[in-house]
Image 1: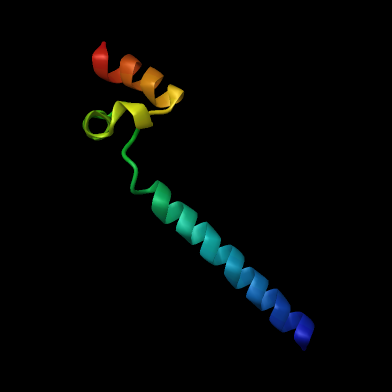
Image 2 (image 1 turned 60 degrees about the horizontal axis):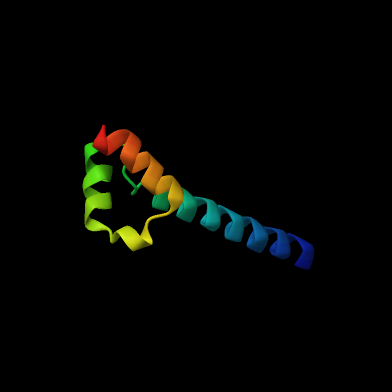
Length: 62
């Protein structure tokens, strides 16, 4: 029985991790959207990643 309970615990942990990942990704606005551009305007420029800076220039400036 300990093998089954171990499997159930592992499955529960994996399912919880997947649910957490999906719920967090659903909160972020789509890159290039008006909401995303506004969010980037509010974020300190020193905290931007190189990809964020490139995406901001591509979608929000031009």
